[in-house]
Image (cartoon, rainbow, N blue to C red; front, side, top):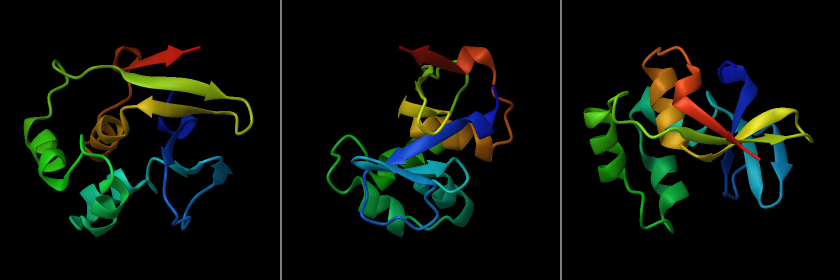
Length: 116
């Protein structure tokens, strides 16, 4: 599997750069996800908007994850096959997959789990 086989779900009203809509989420390639674009640009405006109602996420926590990111400590990214778009959707791990791709790390089987 490679990064092109995986898509990110965003629960957002903004649909710019989305590839599909599967209620209630817009679907994005990793490169077009808010998580990845934030890493590239360093601008957290869209990220903060995305996570404003998610107390487990914040700009501070994402920056700490970037600074402390470790493959040896990383939990597997949770994927689920979606037949409608013929791609895997991330159920848990949008931040991790963005960091992997941003850092140019090849996607290995041990970095993800596929859920039924």
